[in-house]
Image 1 (cartoon, one colour):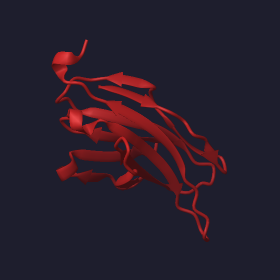
Image 2 (cartoon, helix red, strand yellow):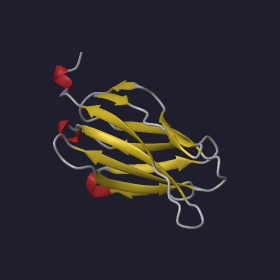
Image 3 (cartoon, rainbow, N blue to C red):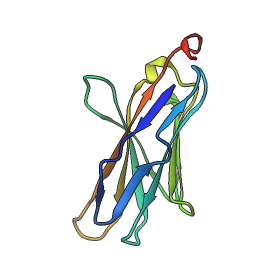
Length: 134
């Protein structure tokens, strides 16, 4: 498995960025994608995860807050934010070649009024069968 992250910017000083640029895992292992975030507005973070397969539109996977984790057993996904260190993790359990896609973590702080800001950072998860990994 090879994971790549790309940063696309920030909004009103709130940012979310990948925790590591590249990662390699074998087929069938759990894969963790992590992003660090920073909030200047003093609000609580709502973090969304999306997945995009080649030639397809991004699909929403999970919403996690700094106070509530989220699990999607049928998708083999779990996400949790750690407020103290401002990091959010997405775990793909028993990752398979079919999980190869572009993954996005998006930060949407909870704010008053009608203002909603989203910052996205895509990550590419490329899987190869364990017999093909070096």
